[in-house]
Image (cartoon, rainbow, N blue to C red; front, side, top):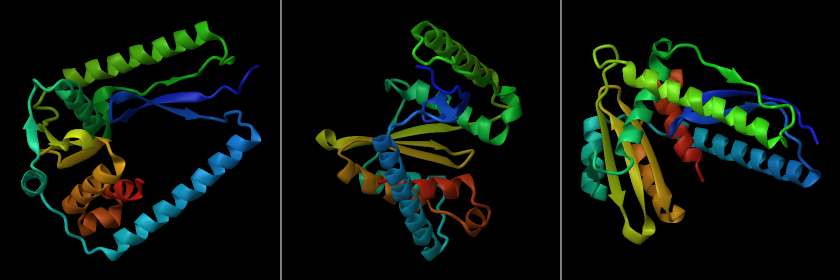
Length: 225
């Protein structure tokens, strides 16, 4: 059976430029459509609730330095170095995201890849994926080639280890005032910590007025559920 072709773009994500965004329709049976509709409505409600929460909060942005001190004191966060297994890949990914957000011209043109018309054709799908992987590698190579004096960064990775309950990674770039938090483990325990860190980092009046990346990150954290 053939499915509608869609366009695909490589976008920055938590793991760099390998996140894929499909534009187009997917075939769904009636149950899948109902389920998708339910989750879309649920997300919209959570998003609206998060917007109201943010609207009720007074602007209270903290600096990167203050946020580092906060997570050290409150959650005993420990800074990781290059010996941490994921350190280098995380560092490269954040640099890519920051350049893509602030100076995308340094990375060259984005590319779009059309998937095969028949998504059941395994060979065609493999060839398509290989093109995407090759382009992702090229994006990272371009990122690595951007020198510090053209786009300075100062990456730090902090780990909040809760043993059997899970762990949080707090990624920070002090020059670009960027913060990203992710976790693995018990969601009921780890999610409130994630939200608390984003809330402490906070937003300024300017962030709210312009719906900045910092504002959208906090909104996303409050929407997370």
